[in-house]
Amino acid sequence: MRFAIPLIVFAAIATFLYMGLGRDPREVPSPLIGKPAPEFALPVLKQPDQQFSPAQMQGKVWLFNIWATWCAACRVEHPLLVQLARSGEVDIVGLNYKDDSDSARQWLVDLGDPYLMTAVDVDGRVGIDWGFYGAPETFVIDGEGVVRHKHIGPVSPQDLTETILPLVAQLREDLK
Image (cartoon, rainbow, N blue to C red; front, side, top):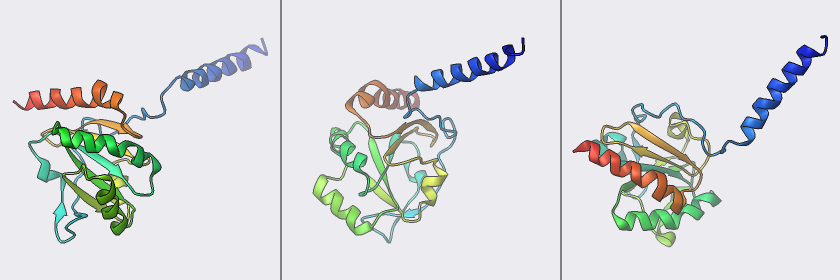
């Protein structure tokens, strides 16, 4: 009997640890899902005298992609974002996170610019408001400005075809 309680506690802990091993680390729940996208106003990378705010995208379904030139995984997903932008399936707005603006502009010249516009988050405060874990991260925002999906890590073709683009299509249909 004196070993029963420690054995039960050990079994419970072992069960929780085992269940955790089966989880995808990219599927971190976001408290923003189903809530209005955090508001901000930041300078635009290519036109620093202008500002971008999510309110400018009201009435549109769009992607919000947080990226940086120092991010190796951002370089991995970038060609896919360029291809997606060329397809015209969905507008993509970028958030250049804690980066050098000159380097960011050159990156877009060298690798292509998939973004309708890119806001500059020099101090990282907007990233924090969005619950940013690490670059890259991509959010799907509906026409009412509500966050509907968060993807952590580089977007893959499979992520696009199985999750992101079907959701975009459904949200667009909901706007009609």
